[in-house]
Image (cartoon, rainbow, N blue to C red; front, side, top):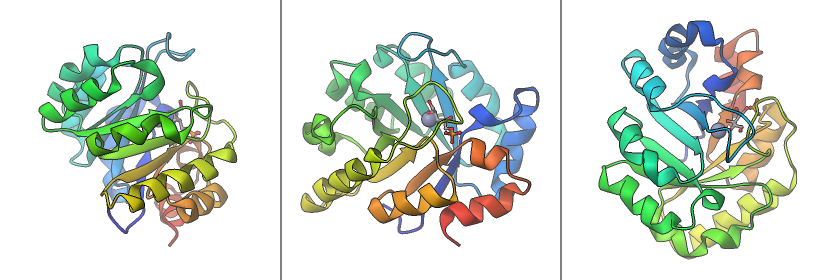
Length: 218
Ligand code: DX5
Ligand code: ZN
């Protein structure tokens, strides 16, 4: 885990007619990751894009590609995302009864494995998966859409997960996703998160560079 707070802009909130351009510029804005929200219209009530989009955007940036799969049966898609150049592949605990096996599959491709939890899912649901993950993604909104309000109870969940990780002496990032702005970013980092996803707050800001610095806490 890095001490530095990492910022992962969600391109879901970017101008889709200019995606290549948007991704090319993320490095100069100071972003660390490119967060790709993959939705299947089944696990969540929205459809976005799949591995071909990841592949198309890959040459546009050297930043870490952070694929957040909001899809049922994610095991079907791991190979395509690995081959499309994703660096971190995160699956939802609720979307896969065999999460343990799928996380190992992600690592078998040399990729970082992430496990995501919906707001209603307890931190206990990942207690037996911690040895098999590089990142835990705590959803602070119900997945499906950008621009929603941060759910406060996710802070307690972040604290509980950070405590579990520290007690076991593991090196695992905690990413928080949904409703992150200058205020909620501070709360999430104090609770123990070290990777912040932000869509609306970045793409609606006048200066992306400035808002990224502020979210990071500089
Ligand atoms: C929600 C997505 C998020 C979302 C974040 O399902 O996983 O990544 O786009 O957007 P904001 O920051 O606008 O809540
Ligand atoms: Zn996301």
